[in-house]
Image 1 (tube, rainbow, N blue to C red):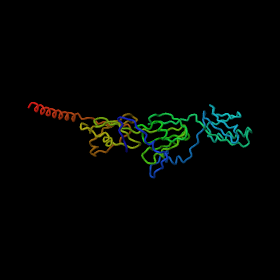
Image 2: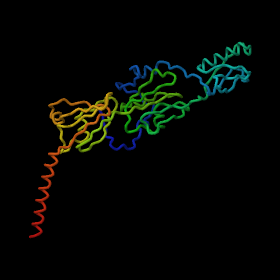
Image 3: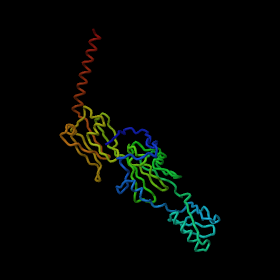
Image 4: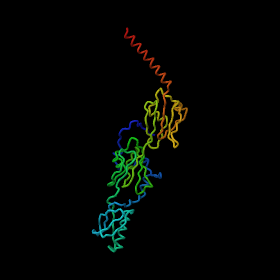
Amino acid sequence: MTAKRISIIGPTALAFCAVALGSSAAPGSSPAVNSTGQPASSAASRKAPALQIAAGDLLEVIVFDTPELSARLRVDSKGEVTLPLGEVVHVAGETAEQAGALIETRLRERDVLKQPHVTVFIAEYATQGVSVLGEVRIPGVYPALGTHGMLDFISLAGGVTSAAGKSVSITHKSDPAHPVIVLLDNAPDMPARANVEILPGDTILVSRSGIVYLVGDLARPGGFLIENNDRLTVLQAIALAQGANRTAKLSNARLIRKTPEGRKETMLDLKKILQGKSPDIPLEDNDILFVPSSEAKNMAYRSVEATIGLATGAIIYGTVVR
């Protein structure tokens, strides 16, 4: 379990982006997983579906040994391209390989070539952006030109915020039903695991860490992060707040938790929990732990402080008089 205080959120850097992306995997480290709970490496080994052509894409059509039929063609709003000879072929929804096969068929049907060999490359995607969302400093859509990994795009988005969790979800446009989850931990192989290739139309979502709030008569009240899915208990939270003040009424603390029915308030006897007479309670995201002050203790300490002040004044006055 790891937590950090966020009563004042300052700028943080994405340190892991500076690590070389080609690091080799270390044995025994935790692998990334996909939405089915399988390691991301096995998901990556499954051949991902090729990207489909969409309206606005720019295609480079190469007809072998026939340069006059080769051209760079823009897919129109109907999802069609017009070949140099005027032939119209519908290619939207097809992969580059399938589009090449369709053009070959059309050239044979029109008796333009007996045995055409056509290769199609997608030179430009109409929507080349990669969405980087969640706990990053500058969320938005970033251009996907060339081959880049996940860390490159998180770095472009200014790095993660201080409230970011450890998990990053990558949803490929070509396979939205199988998002890949990458854990940004401190393992030596993290850069290699996180170097997932990002393609146009993909979405990167950086998760938010859970937060618990400690308020009241504490040394350092504030908000504290629960990184990833770890739990923070009441005792651990009190320790992070550097303990309760001597005027705190530990037996009358309250835990305020958000439920589907609304806010639920539970009385806690922190004194018994600290003494081990009551079980420690795990806190959840957005919990509020309130530790009130004791009026009796406040009055007692004020009285003692007033007495000390009077005695000190009398000593000083007597010294001056003599």
